[in-house]
Amino acid sequence: MANDLEKNQYYLHPGYIFFSSSPYLISTVLGSCVSVCIWDCVLNIGGMNHYMHARPFSDEQSGTFGSVSIPCLINFLIDAGSKKANLRAHIVGGAQSPLLGNSMIGKENIDIANEIVQKNNLSVITNDTGGSMGRKVIFDNVSGEIVIYKVNKLRKCDWYEDDKSFNN
Image (cartoon, rainbow, N blue to C red; front, side):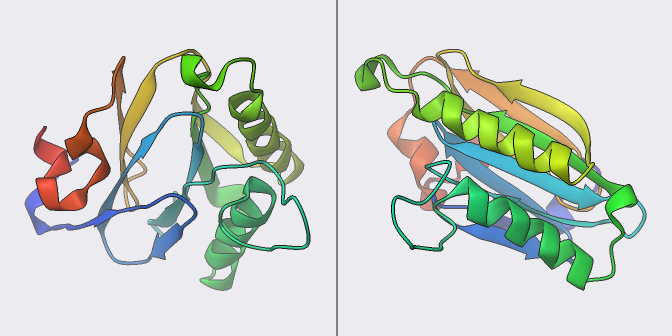
């Protein structure tokens, strides 16, 4: 991640989508949630989402749901001039938390990401999903580079951008 000091940093909270044509290092922390990072390898633009559930429980349409936020992120890129053939994706997260028992939330989140990315014929560069470990993700929206830290126990400082989460 060259020239990281010159890049803006953005901490992505659950239920949000972030897209920019300016250089950013986007970070988030995932348990059973999933983030799909998509960038255009020709235009060098990209973004990331962080969703908590695969599909809405009612008519709600928000970034909380993968079936809403992934197509929205793809549309942000298309609206900025990208062609689907130039889009590359990382799919990260979807851990099974022992605290959630037999919940299938993580698996459902992974499945919706794979389904939508495949339906849109996007090239998947990274698919780091499942398991029982939480993940801290840093994504360079211009180069498409990604760093994934796997942790057994997420720390309080991982959740808050004010705690300089890139350095912990």
